[in-house]
Image (cartoon, rainbow, N blue to C red; front, side, top):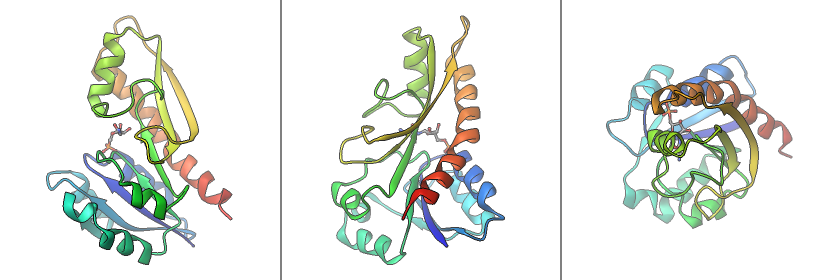
Length: 189
Ligand code: GAR
């Protein structure tokens, strides 16, 4: 059985989709949800899904104890599903090629500090880009720079707004993220 931990900070639509996708798959278990934001709707979702919830503050998140706690869960993959803190180097080292992130743009453009959620879409629309999309990638020590697993594209319309673009990106995330997670798990030795 493959064991996942899902890290979240916000609404949790990706968390919900991943949980629903694997709900009837006995080979995949979401062991816990790690959340850094006490106001996140993800908390409700985790409760409704019956998945153990681990709230963290910044001090805990940066501690060796947290790394050991995560290691003790015998995880096959950590999934960052709208998690907005940078992953500490020691945690990355403890889970080599075992952390994946989804980013709502075509990296390396519109990545790095400050580029998350709607800020990304505002910047993409303001720059009048012809395309945007999603990037699913492994997490390394440098923000938004790990090896890319998949990018999916969407075209911007002339009248595109950050909100309309967000809806298109949401569709791509819902379609691709669980499938890519499944592929990553299947490719593990
Ligand atoms: C998603 O669009 C995800 O790509 C983005 O946050 C949103 C979370 O939505 N992630 C980042 O911006 C990471 N830099 P959700 O909480 O509804 O899944």
